[in-house]
Amino acid sequence: MADEQHPTPDPVERPALIPDPAGRRNTFIDAAALARGEEVVYVLRQGQTLEEFWAEHDAMIAAAAAPEAVRRLVPKSLIVARLHAAGLLAAGRAALDADLHARERWYAPDRPAIYADDPEALALLTGIGADPEAILAP
Image (cartoon, rainbow, N blue to C red; front, side, top):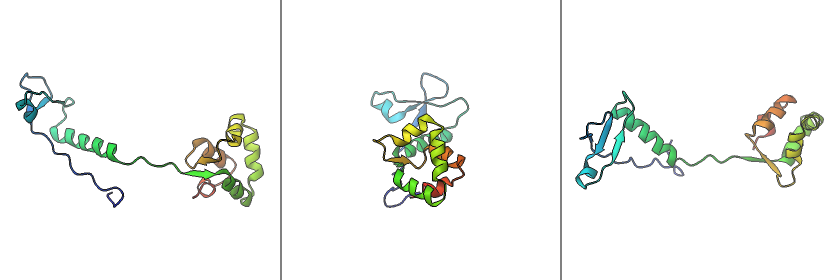
């Protein structure tokens, strides 16, 4: 969906394609490039139509132009406060103590926050009966 921050990209002008003069199957040549002495080749999958090819092409261009999603960080202090308020702080501590890797990740001094979509954090919170969406909310 287009908006002010993410406008719809201008449609890419499609070249006029001609069947490959060399007779290669499922292969088309850019006619304008051929007139300039260049060979720009487009190869379709077996049974693929030009319309299907261009639809896939346009989807790939749009995906490449789309901004990458920004992963949201949640401060650990906020998570602790929310677990305490929910009466689940002791359960969270017990879960961390049972998993050395998770515990070391949690107490790593260079990581004051965790990603809201971290699969290990989501699993741990679910495992102690917490609501991950509430605990990791913005």
